[in-house]
Amino acid sequence: MNAGQRRVIIVGSGPNGAVYARRVLEQTENVSVLMIEAGPVLTDPLGMNVRNIPDPAAQTEAKLASQGPASGRAGVAGIPTGAVMEGTVTARQGTHLVGRAANGSGGLPAAAAATCVGGQGAHWTCATPRPIGSERIDFIGDDELDALLDEAERLLHTTHDAFGGAPQATAMLDLISAEFTDQGIAVRPLPVAGDPQVDGSMRWSGTDVVLGSLAESETHLERFELRPETLVVRLVVEGADVVGAVLRDVRTGVETEERADEVVVAADALRTPQLLWASGIRPDALGRFLTEHPLVFGVVAVKDGLLPPPDPGAAPVDPVRVVVGVRFDEERHPFHAQMLYSPVCPIPLPPDSPHFGNPSGYVGMGWGVRKWPRPQDRVTFDDAEPDENGLPGIRIAYEVTEREVAELDRAREFQARAAAALGEFIDGMPVVMPPGSSLHYMGTVRMGPADDGDSVCDSYSRVWNHPGLVLAGNGLIPTANSCNPTLTSVALAVRGADALAARLSDG
Ligand SMILES: Cc1cc2nc3c(=O)[nH]c(=O)nc-3n(C[C@H](O)[C@H](O)[C@H](O)COP(=O)(O)OP(=O)(O)OC[C@H]3O[C@@H](n4cnc5c(N)ncnc54)[C@H](O)[C@@H]3O)c2cc1C
Image (tube, rainbow, N blue to C red; front, side):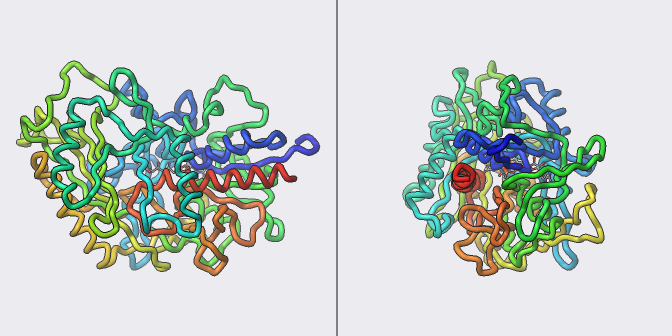
């Protein structure tokens, strides 16, 4: 490092780590960024959404490469491999299971993560609804949170009129609206992160769009280095200060220590607390208040004549042609629902199914429900039985309570009405998905307004009492919400990154 030069290490190359890299570099002149990622590079540009890869074999290869050292375990019991109504069904290629149930608990059997440059942001469905009412974080002012969410939408390329020109979109919106709007429930095109293309398809956002020019391999930027296939095994802590990280090259096993002025850990909601635990940073709230979205999911075979038939000539890379969202409303509809229309069935159907090859296509519909934060829903770490990387084993204690069961029952009623408006469920649907299926894990490193034992970090994402340590990701979200979390966590990362850049510039 040159004199006066400062350095930030970022652990994790998903959308939240990318926010820190981009903003710190854009807002400073004297700071270099070393981004460490356990998984491999999949795409050029870095971190692109693999759904944009046109060649199906290459797409599958990129998904398999993201499944971590234990990729043989990928696939969750009860869900067919290749189930791809993303955002609503789990065990998708591209992810691998993480952790296991704590003794006496059902855990989150479907808990999964992606290990690759871009993180889960290389695989996500891109639904970016905003948190509403009680879903919002009340210790960040409303106007400020709205501005942060605006900036997050800009970074993720969120569009509010996806597939506006698709012939099926208007018809589907009309049918679902007719079912719900007289109750005051808002039905809208689902906000999604992507860039509409002239042929009517979508270029889905990945972490590439958040990285911006950092994602272009030909861009040589002196102050930025991405080190893939490198695992952070612990943070270097001196006194209470975090001053660096110990890195392991996963190809050679060689470990080195790197120093930094500040370290940002953006290693997902299960592996971020794992790394803190492994580093001896163990505040009371670490791993507690784990939430996700209990999910009821079904696929509807659309009734003939309701929607214009799909264009037989169109062979898009990704089959989704319409996205419809039903918004959260505290009283009337305390859920976020998403419906994705596709000419092809999003899950494999046996050829003898009455719904096989349905000429009018299919709609996958998921209703996500709130989980109320409780300290006993938590991730713990087993030093005696480490994971495949030698890091403390992840154990998950988690129960769905009567409160969430009641909300799931209520959600099913809304879902049944939407399904009846469009056609009928295919065999065996809808189903309440196994816990963990949402892939939206939150609360494990939650932020809070005060260091009162119920939070791990402050509202600028700085870990209480550990100067030099900043966290990012869905684990920071402290509320009971039902909206897909990435837009919110990216908004929080914008706040934390701008504060970090200001600190580093001030010297
Ligand atoms: C199939 C799928 C569909 C989804 N759909 C949606 C959706 O529609 N809407 C939505 O809001 N969200 C969705 N999500 C979730 C969304 O992708 C995540 O919220 C988002 O990627 C979180 O970003 P992140 O940067 O915090 O973490 P991640 O993207 O998870 O990235 C974390 C990275 O950290 C790395 N890492 C972990 N530990 C270490 C270590 N010790 N050393 C080095 N690196 C490490 C991991 O390898 C990973 O690459 C979906 C996810 C998947 C998989």
